[in-house]
Image (cartoon, helix red, strand yellow):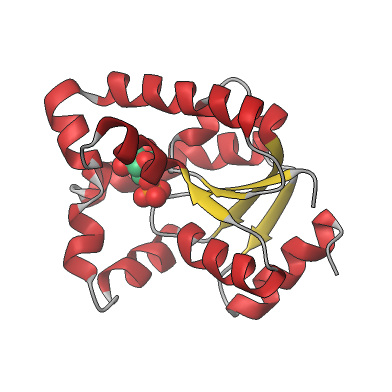
Length: 171
Ligand code: S3P
């Protein structure tokens, strides 16, 4: 696989889970933009938001996007929920939007084994009303940059990764 694949979508939709399953099945590497930022800053996301604010975090995402475009090939990249805003996303690789209703996402997060930590590590998921408004606001924007939209509700992991593999031409 020469091109990168980027998984985008709302917080908690399962980008990381799908990325790991895909990487294992097709023998490729996957990286995560939040992990890259945390290791570069040597701070967790909530700390970065708390200390420097959201704009600073968005600038880090843009720097990361430039680096990905220049330096990374043939990799599956799972993206933070706001990463779609970087101005070069479509130059990094094929963009796959994982879509699901807000209620499904919230249910997935809140019934997870480690629900508390899953919610705590997401500063923009602290207030349910605000998170829902953000979801509404972003839905169109995700679709706009997507090369493929995958509806993940009612599908199992295997089906989802097959759909993505088919689209990018992996057998
Ligand atoms: C964000 C999503 C988070 C993380 C940060 C901001 C967002 O990533 O990048 O908390 O703006 O939607 P996940 O989508 O992996 O939760």
